[in-house]
Image 1 (cartoon, rainbow, N blue to C red):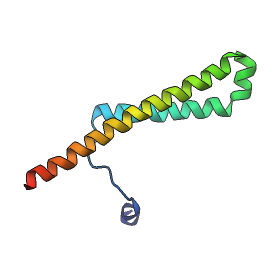
Image 2 (tube, rainbow, N blue to C red; image 1 turned 45 degrees about the horizontal axis):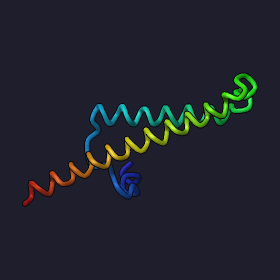
Image 3 (cartoon, rainbow, N blue to C red; image 1 turned 180 degrees about the horizontal axis):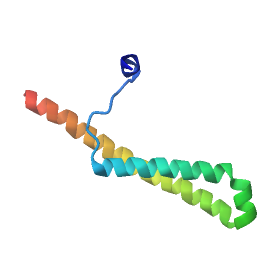
Image 4 (cartoon, rainbow, N blue to C red; image 1 turned 90 degrees about the vertical axis):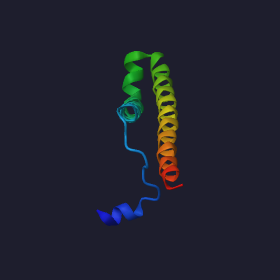
Length: 90
């Protein structure tokens, strides 16, 4: 386990808040839903017709927006956490 930790290039700095955890879970669920839509696109298209491409675009858009928002929030939390350590040392 310690060898794996040594291979991680940039560990997460800030502890995960409930808000960040909820965002991370939304992103993971969005990716899972997108994977299911892509995997079962042919049966979905047979069942839903022309609504299937719209469902694919909607899932992809959800993942992009949620992922972008989560990354911004996580980066801001990491930056604040890292700057807090530097402020204490000065």
